[in-house]
Image (cartoon, rainbow, N blue to C red):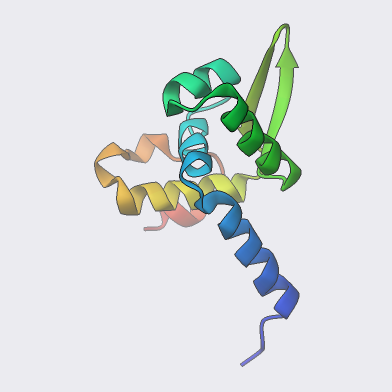
Length: 114
């Protein structure tokens, strides 16, 4: 059996910690449906602008989300399709009644096998 490199274990642990916060996970669940601006995310999550901005900045620094400015609004989307798959799997485990096969994120061949 081949040992998993410690740096890979550490990176996975950091990635999981990054999305483990309730607000960040909520944001990612909403972003599964597509890009959203900060105002839409505030309304969807109930978070204040300053709190939400701090969490979005952290996720952006970690490469989990990207942003794009369109006029006066900044829109966020999930940057890494693997994170979208991970969040979708979590959603199917904890919110199965909210999941439909048509709502799978792009590039989810692994998920479609199940």
